[in-house]
Length: 186
Image (tube, rainbow, N blue to C red):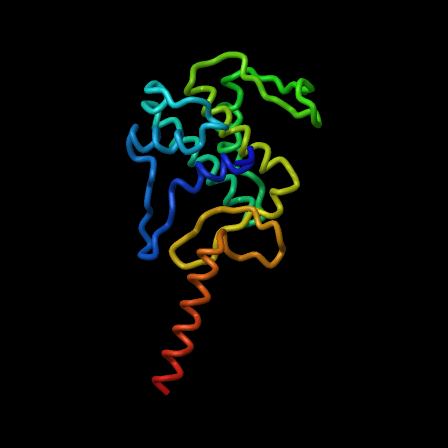
């Protein structure tokens, strides 16, 4: 998972359902622990202390969702949400170093210098959102147009309307079914 995708993954842990309700996959400390376990590269290890901070992760998620929504609508970023994301990022001092120890091309390695496990995980997610919203990919942020999805994603092509091939397939099948059904009822 790229650094940019970590912020999207947290934002997408709250999803719209086809019936208009929302499905929250971060309701409990256990839910957060499972989410962190699925994203170990960006968030570090999963510790009990981190999972118990579910409220802070949900607050950060809310701020990121506000920012992504503004980006989709091509509106200015809400200052309150910007402040909340910047605050989460600033909780941990970090540096990026160039690692040339391997035989191939040098790579950038981020080192987090201080902070609790929870602060490091929150900071990593916040920096992911900052990288996306502060970079050229911001122009490509979209909301999946598949019914019942509503996930945020980065459209790497101008004609991309769905977050995944599964959503695209589901929409194409639904349209095909609707055409067949309307053709039979005529």
